Image 1 (cartoon, rainbow, N blue to C red):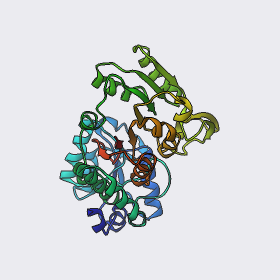
Image 2: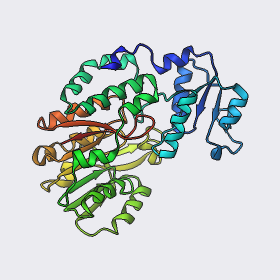
Image 3: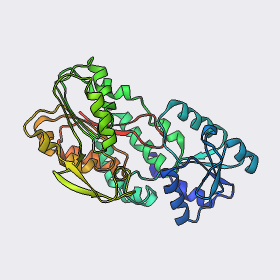
Image 4: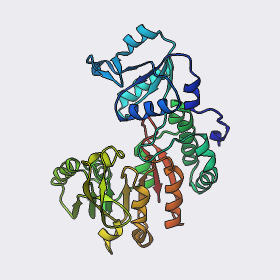
Length: 353
């Protein structure tokens, strides 16, 4: 695999850089990147944003400028650090256009959990990555695995494109939704995946069970579900390996930031919710709790063997932990990895069929 030939990470490159390093974007991602900069003595020179977001404000002590103003200050020979995430086509087009004109990197920082996906991490888990590669069922999946590791190590956008495919390919060639689905959606957000699913079944389904912990998102989900008719169950809860109540602290992770500090959150396991009810498709996008959610669905998976659609990008270890766990829970699964258009390496999904 190509990633095994990489000798320098994006952090190593930036630490040696003599040119001005400017961040493109603000927010949580930029905060995390600047924290690593501080730990590794990497010096940022400025921050810029898309023209429509520049309002004379500042971020992390830097005045937020436009790209034109940044070039006027530093010249064209700069290193641009992408510091926000997007899947919007017009934004991705702008990112890739910048990559053709400038030296652009998108350092990988985990959505959940600690530590960095660096060479030490990758080589420590080489056996697990090799095991996953051996389990994957097609060449595109192995290409995705290699490309995502390469990207996480180098921050080079070209690797994202190497492993990219449209979500429609996963639905039409892998998941293949049908009108008799018993669909369970953990991390249902506002019903976006349910909409996708029903788009392929012409609105038909046998049952839908959806979990969403965030009150605002749950209201949106409930509003959307009012327009559907059939066996629908909505539960305001998070996904876990058992039924319990947990406390989430503010800014302890992307999931827990949804809740006020010290707020109690109800957590549910799929096996407890479904008990003996059927499940033909299970989607897990639960902001870093995918491993626990899979364990909480162990009986459901053993009995019904539902097709799985599992987010595989929130934690550094997700690329090997989740495929290996899915295989352990059902050795008959055919496993696939897909990366749908997104910068950075988000929307990397494990599909188990």
